[in-house]
Image 1 (cartoon, each protein chain N blue to C red):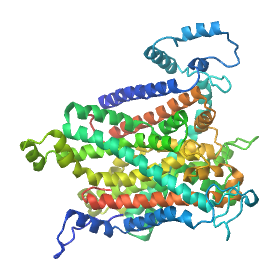
Image 2: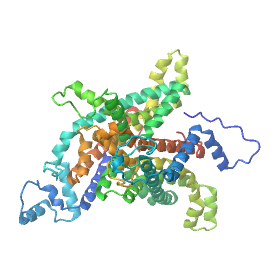
Image 3: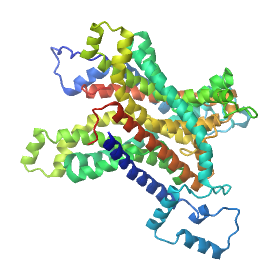
Image 4: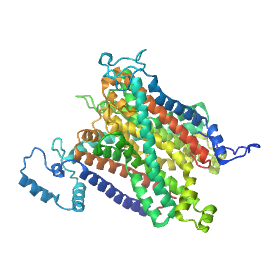
Length: 296
Length: 317
């Protein structure tokens, strides 16, 4: 998909800082830029869209049930006459929030453990990484569903469960990065100056993992959004009346809704695919931009 | 190779133990008396009898001892009784396993064949319109969850176009091979979408890595025709890393199958599992979790073994 980049001739003028070089590489990645624009539009729509709607997402109107899209209800209404446009956008807030917060949990847990493993090495590394191996071999969807069935539904639980299953990858990435960083001279210099481990780790070593984490976040958010949708679709994630993209699709489990009222489930489905697609493009572009040596 | 296989096998045993331990721990947090899972509900038992059964089953023993006992029963194929109707869990799972294996096998087969085929096409015609179309398809496939693809497929191909039946395993009263195949086609195709997308990308990049190697040029220079160079010289080496990807995605395949079985009313283990979750039928949840997780581990093991078999350079260290 990507041309093997023949290292571009150095720009004669501007100073080439790593950040600037990465930005240039990212902007050259057309799909990534398109993804970023699309993602921006979706976020704007989800944040400001509800204000443009005449209806609130939970406003029931039994006289206007199962209305097709039209001038009053832009995307039609559901079985209890709630406005699909308002519900889909409000659902988007929840879905994006779940995606971001659960990825944040993964990042915090993964970075902490990965930093300890990568920086200290030895038995600490062994212990943590064997644990990661075990968690990574877990059939995550099955464990996820079973866990969700046991702890019960809810936004907070959904975020927690998805976050706690996603950290091993972040842990591996951070560890791998720190293993190479800790051999560098500036770490040796800091050690020679007598800086304590905590200071070296936090001030000198950890800032170097920002680039791998940025890539992890973009890809992690995409998979978290998919997991939330799956859980909520089965009624194990976000619960109605609060809409989420996943539980809006639940209505389509009934064949009549699926066949006769496609406007009730298609917008949510389309937004899931577009958001995940855009996030994947951005993640792909970031990976190429931040680590030009890495292969796809 | 023998030692490699043996060591690989030995490693997956503790893994399965850890998973069973977790399942067992989860079982302890489920509401209700675990004793109920062992007594068929249609049997009337007095409090005295319950105490005796509790003692016999060792439920008054420490948790670690209980775990050992549970493991012993599970190994012997005894997974307890369903809360719903008192039937043995293991027998029900065994009955529902063949449709699931059929669906997964078909989805995986289609996925591997189509994925490699499209991957080769994209690599051979790289940077053309065909390559771009396949790339877009791959990204769409990766970004669409199985259940959404299932809903869309059901809507378009079964309800609107009426090319396929709208779910089920067979037409009542029919059940011939052709009948089952016509019911299988749509869910299997949809199940294969993610697989096709992922495999296609890996096959493509793997071929592009191999295609510039010296021995490929040598083959061309000797006058071997291009299709034969690709199929005999390039593909054989390019597919080695692809095998790992096949195995790594089995977990996704099973996850997808669970959702699709529910959407297409496919009477398999996945649907049984979701029904059990709906009904909070804990012995059945644990039983199906164990079987599905075990299947994934087994598939990973087989992939690793195949990897060792086709690439003689692999040595387990």
